[in-house]
Image (cartoon, rainbow, N blue to C red; front, side, top):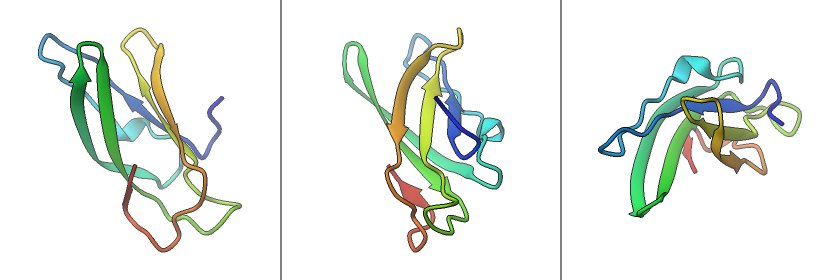
Length: 93
């Protein structure tokens, strides 16, 4: 389950595998999605590389996850961020 520190990416796939990302939908306060790269790796698989900028201060305050959400609200994928990125901003995972 996502909490207030998590980031949500809204995405949909068109005929060309296009993606729409709404950075304003992030739930991490000052966290911003500053870049997204989507690569098709097989017929039904896509790899997302997401660049996030957030004022991580340590274990008590950091962006800890992002999700790709389909147009129907289904979670298509999730990346758990296992540690703060205090000295690595922005960061890509």
